[in-house]
Image (cartoon, rainbow, N blue to C red):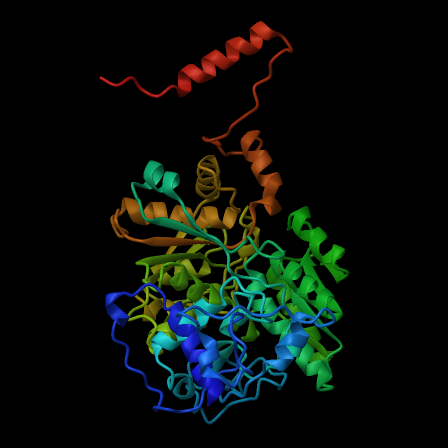
Amino acid sequence: MASSSLFHSSLSSLTPKQTAFYQNPTSKRPPNSPLTVSCTSSTVDPSSSSPAAATTNNSPPLKSRRAFDENIRDEARRHRAPHNFSAKYVPFNSGFDSPESYSLDEIVYRSRSGGLLDVQHDLDALGKFDGAYWRRLFDSRVGKTTWPYGSGVWSKKEWVLPEIDDDDIVSAFEGNSNLFWAERFGKQFLGMNDLWVKHCGISHTGSFKDLGMTVLVSQVNHLRKLKRPVVGVGCASTGDTSAALSAYCASAGIPSIVFLPANKISMAQLVQPIANGAFVLSIDTDFDGCMKLIREITAELPIYLANSLNSLRIEGQKTAAIEILQQFDWEVPDWVIVPGGNLGNIYAFYKGFKMCQELGLVDRIPRLVCAQAANANPLYLYYKSGWKDFKPVKANTTFASAIQIGDPVSIDRAVYALKQCDGIVEEASEEELMDAMAQADSTGMFICPHTGVALTALDKLRKSGVIGAGDRTVVVSTAHGLKFTQSKIDYHAKAIPDMACRFANLPTQVKADFGEVMDVLKEFLLNKAPPKSK
């Protein structure tokens, strides 16, 4: 009881910016009930028995530095508190009370009918705390080093893996990625002043996949401590999944096995699992062929499957949606545009936004757009058919290699999410996505081709009037541009066959002569000079 009072009093000074929606929140928690959340703010010592110690002149107390022989995990052990939250696997689109369910400690990927599974949380237990409480709690953890809450994923631990022991968590303090105001790009190319790019690629391994992999590898770490038959973790990958898997497994000392399609990913992506010590198999097939093989292998060997068929990944990825809301002071954007390949991402964003709505943190969710490369567009074709006829496609080569997937595992999840939020699917040709990437880079970004796909979708929806000039729009950037330097080099060198490369920026060859250098500089500066005022 004392620690409850202490924690609430400390959070009273951390209330975020108020909006009309939650100026007068109604608490669902019974008065004087004990706090059961397993968390602390780094400015509060929950072991203190004095509520008065929480504030002095309405300011949080200064926290003493931990002992020299104690690390942040040791410190977290001293601050543990009980919780009453839980989660379990149920068949996709079933509720927490589904008659078919599985513990998260079971190794299971499909329901009895062969369908997808989903992680469902006990929303009744979570709902005993009102939306204002969760907003304050999540906000109080941002930017801290308190284990494990310094991670953008684990700062929402109660909504991710509520029952895992903090000691089992494998984290690189991922997440908390930059929400970039794309001021110049929005104004110059789209006539928008409220365009944002969520740079999820600014992460430990340079991709969005870190958010899901910290959850999956943490659970594997937990399973191995329980002596479950798991000798390693495996995935099929077009690049980023293997980078994230190998890095987190290396951190935990768990063997990782990677199936890569030969000659179909960038060298920057290939070198990551190699450098992290993964056992890499380069296989003469495409991603869908690798995916088929890894599913067959994991059915026979005690290798844990890490692809997005595994619904644990979704739990980490959904926290990016919650981060977006936090970064807007819990105001909901109008649109969020997500590149789509295996299609776990679009469902993850929906799930994060929907949980925030259901638990009272916000009053609505944004409309979602899933953007696909035209060379790998099964969801787009399904959408254009009016959701009447889904057919896998043979994915053709695309510069957006991470979404070069013709038979997406999470098709049912994606369709459900889009239908629930009146979502849209759009596509981008190779020339469109590369031009969009070049335009974005010219305004100070350095994005991946997949973000070029999303920006192309935005451009098309702006031109058709679906997205308005004043709509607050977030484009999700899923990987770091440095992983795709060769495609950028080829574009600016105009070395891509059958592509005009309209925004190429070639170096100017000039002799080491003062006069010649002055001439080319004068010509350049005259072309760049601002127009004279009348």
